[in-house]
Structures are given as structure tokens and as C-alpha cells.
Amino acid sequence: MEDAAKRAEMRERSRSSTVPQIFINGQHIGGSDELAALEQAGKLDTLLAQAG
Image: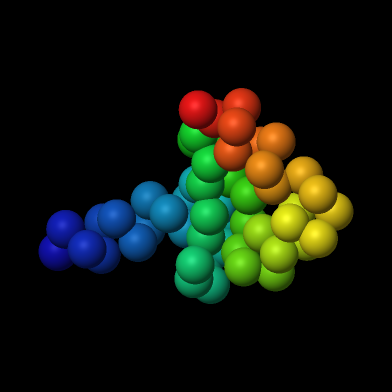
């Protein structure tokens, strides 16, 4: 039951039901495609550094 509640919370927070859904420092990044796009654009390292 707890896993179902966690999945429901993640769907609500991310507005998506696909996995993985990636959050950095509480900010919803998206899925693996969005994460790869951040890396490709040279923005991922900065985002991670800001998150501490």
C-alpha cells in the first residue's frame, strides 16, 4: 500500500506516470530524455552544483 501511495504522490508532483521522473533539489526535471537534454546543453553540472 505504501508503494502505491508513493507512486500516486510522484504522479501528482510530476504530472507524469512514466519512470524515471527526476527531481534535483525538489525541482522536477522530467524524465531521462530531459536529463540528457540538460547534459547535452551543458546545464546539468550547473544545476547539480547549485543543488549542493
